[in-house]
Image (tube, rainbow, N blue to C red; front, side, top):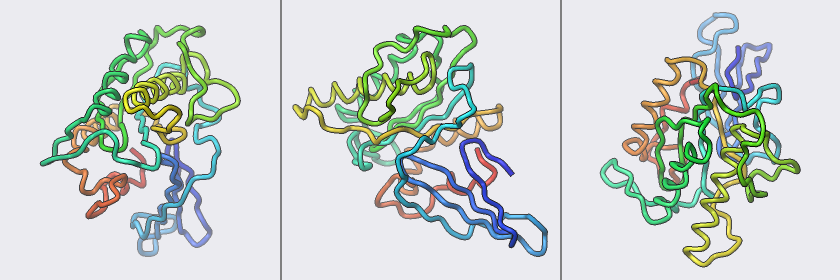
Length: 240
């Protein structure tokens, strides 16, 4: 059994464990076989979240510069609520949230080979669907990618890749926010980011719905420190 961006471990007892990384946290979902069906796993028994050790969460064999559609999540440093608040199921952006939106919307202007689909800026994270189209350049498309506070790689991201896109967006936001609040050098984002490769229209539609409904579901959001329940997005053992 396999899900993109996720590691599955199947034990001889039939227990299946799913590991994936979201915004610096490693999430483990344990699945128990249903009835006597060999190898079946359809009941979510528990979710354990712990700090993610600093290692790459990208697929090593995947070319993130090739044309494709990606679901991206970028979280604030220590999941601080920096960008506004949710009121009656609607996200109200503050000044910092508007900076995030402005820089995000600049992406296809800076990089013509990129198209943005649905996105939402929440109090402490951004969800966005990024499309790298067929006519993007092979080299020379990274733009001014700075050594960022979050990616922490000894080498820069591949030119024209998803990493290059995020590697330009995050420091641009950080620079503007720190200039505005007079906090030079202060972290705005968590290290790295989470991505999911969208393989088909069904997956794209489900993620678009999730992004659109995110403010209405804030009270259940896994990134909300005061959430009142469980986000349905956590209960998708077949992947999204």
